Length: 113
Length: 108
Image 1 (cartoon, each protein chain N blue to C red):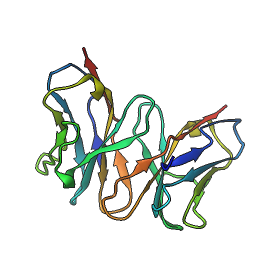
Image 2: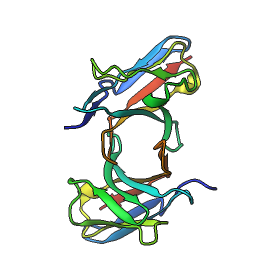
Image 3: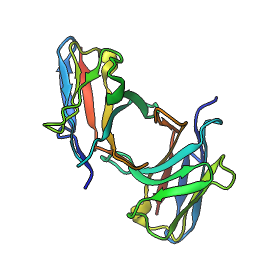
C-alpha cells in the first residue's frame, strides 16, 4: 500500500497519560499535515511540515501538543497529560509540491477516559 | 478571519434529482477552494478544486467571489454519491480550513 499510513488506528488512554501517534506519508511527498476531527466537525488544522521544518502551527494547539518530522519522512504527534477533551480522530495528510492535493491517512482515534 | 460555512448537515435527494451542496467562505484575499469527500469506511479524499475547473464524477463547483460561495452541484444524483462532503479553503498560508460537512443521502 503506497498511501498514507497511521499508527495506531485506535488508542484508549487514561486522563493524564502521554500518547504518541505516528504518520508515514507517501514516500515522495515533502509536505505533511496533522488535523484533529471531532464528532460533527470537519478536520481542524493542527500543524504543517515541509520536509523536516515545522512551518505552521495552529494557535489553538496547546503546549501539551508537539509534533516532529525529524528526517523529513515520518512524523510523530505527541500529546502530553491527555485530557478528555483531546478525544478525537487525529488525521495525517501528505502532499507533493504544486497542485496541493492532500492525501489523507485513515486516522488514529483517541479516546481519553 | 478565515471561515468556511456549510449550512446543511444533511441533504437527502432522490436518485436522478439535482444536487447542490452549499459552501460559503470568509476570506479577504483570493482563496483556493476545494471539495473533499468521504465515502463510508473510506478515507477523506479530494473531489475537486476550483483552479482545475473540471467535472469529477459529474460534480462541478464554481467559485463566486461576489457571493463568496463555492457550491457543489450535480445534475443527476446517483446512489453511489451518498457520502460526507467537506468544503475547504486555503488562503495564503499552508493552513486549510474545513467546513463542518454535509452528509448527502441519495435515496433509491
